[in-house]
Image 1 (cartoon, each protein chain N blue to C red):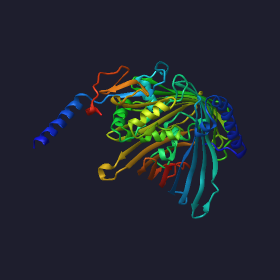
Image 2: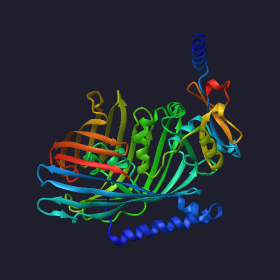
Image 3: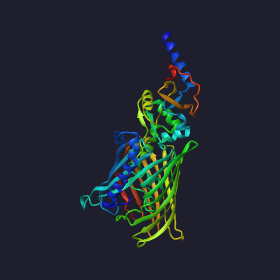
Length: 346
Length: 161
């Protein structure tokens, strides 16, 4: 996720909270008491910690993140959601011992939803860009592996500041989720990332049927600070994702293809993943994981990954993950080697 | 010996009766609610219990109630309306939690469903149709895997409870 400096973080929170109160209180005052207003808040979150034995770096143990989720739902048509994440709050390796040097705060999401009708809502604020199933459900207790597929974080903006029209429509015995969105406020510069995005807009539909198919279209301008000396390029992108089960085996995958208007090298990526329950071996709630990945980016060339491992669902909200990853090229979010982690909701 | 035979025959008859008369589930809202304003349909019922539809057409927030996951009625309701059993929905509810949406509130008994639904604005729940009373208003009926807006013919007796 994009990191923002302290001043901007405070402004974001201030803007969000003031907006929420300004818009919600007049409605609340007519319909319910202050006690009802306060009882509409819910606070939760998730966290993960792990150890990485990389091929090229020192072994490192770390608390990966502590993420707080704050929601508010009252009697009005407004609702509020915010996610504030403390990333890498504490890490240890042989050279630097215990340290907090990588620690930083990210405002992952902060938005208000207004219900227009039973099937239509409008969202205002910062939200996860809805063009990838993994991006929308990337919390560590929700995904089988400690590492994130390359294609889901190097090809598109992971969050957008703007407006979104979204809802669900009933069609026969399944639901169609739709999202139309556009950027209003450009993201802040992130010193830790070589990529910045602007002029983001797009759409996504997802079918809640056997294959849980999602199709996304996105347009944006990407600035690559390192590889292209800060040059910007416009891209259109198509994405497709699915998740399905066959004899209790979970199959999932995503594919992305970017197109540059002038036919330049643009980039693409995909992954396929399976999760096989090991109940037949007497290992209740253990799953065997395999994943293959590919990523191609302009100038940077191709990267491949393979991954295999096992994940234990300790409780419905807790996962213990053990995995080996290999492949080509270094990618900071996807190290090659042995990775173990424990993730949980609270 | 004769008593044992009679008890056996009674149980056998009960089993046969239950097989021929499967439980009817009534989907209920508070009795004071104006049904036509809610526009509840079989397909919107699914969206409501998946928490994809959070508001009634009149703008009231929907408060759905579920029975606990081991309850026989919950299993029937979940498999017919949502297409899966509660234990198969763990990933789904975790995903919604990540996006700030809570699953339907769970209560322990059908009496609790009726009580909470009758006392909560925007509430919806489900009970065995034979346990309905004046505190709630049935809007949909579930029987034999079908969801209907019309009350099916059903005969309530001790055997169906």
